Length: 421
Image 1: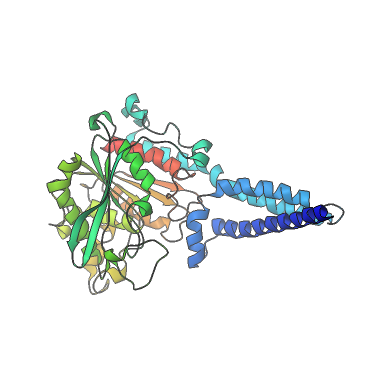
Image 2 (image 1 turned 60 degrees about the vertical axis):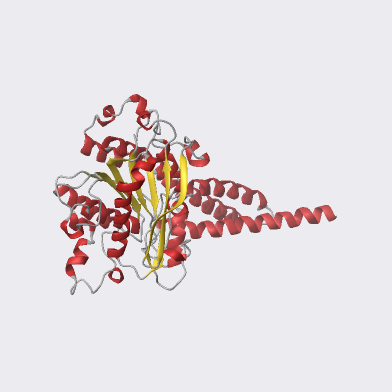
């Protein structure tokens, strides 16, 4: 009798667990499909859209198990039909991001063909291509990740100690002979996101990608910069020592100071090639990437940056094309020049470096029109701007390297860097 009771309780528990899985699945699916102006739902969208492949394989066995536990003699047929419909619907909807991968690939192919010609792969030698992802996407990488070579890493190198803050960088650089690798010592300056008020280097800036690119021969500097202190806490881990009443001018000055130290000190230390520099950042870091990369030689920012660096390309990831009012003195009416110059699309000119943009089509925080304005402004000046778009991808959807968006992104990113370096 005790054994029968245990089996009965176990079945009740499993049935409850299945229903809870369905309930959570319905919430997650709503987050995947519909924009909701709620901070919690927006935060959920960052991660839900990246794990739909795992969820898809969770809902299917859950459906089968619940059907098994729903005995025909005790439940009417409509119950079983409802379970089947809900389960298969959840499975299908969460399979849609995987099903949309060919759309992302075709978009990327069209963009690369437009920038480099249809035979652009012929410009990449086979010995170089051997270092790159062989295909835009495969399920093994999605579920188990992909291996990458080792690199050197140094963390928490102090580069700025003034204005009441300390700023550090982490550096990832190759092992072995640089000239044997695709990057050949080219520099990548990584600028983290976080709404200009939160965030940090490394863990908050796709650390795995830093290592992957460093192993290909790039010297990756993942840097901190001063953040505007809102007085409140954030769910994004943020060191207190980088917070202050900092404006966009201050942030550009601090990052510019890093470029000068790169010229005088760090280039020699890490054997970095200053004739080939890329700037990369996501969200708020993408806005700063656009301002720095497109405004590097602009008179408005004269004196901020080292003249020894040659910017070969910028990589804005879901880039805001605006200047937040609280980060500049005055407003757009009383201080129009500052708001103009801190909007990346306003800085486009024929001498700008080419750009590669990542943009999710389900990004409710930084919408597609931002990236399209930057692309249009650069293209109008005769500068290549490659815009890769990803259906169902929300904000920060590149953070899990290996998901259905990041694999496609990385495949074309590493080739963009090589073709431009």
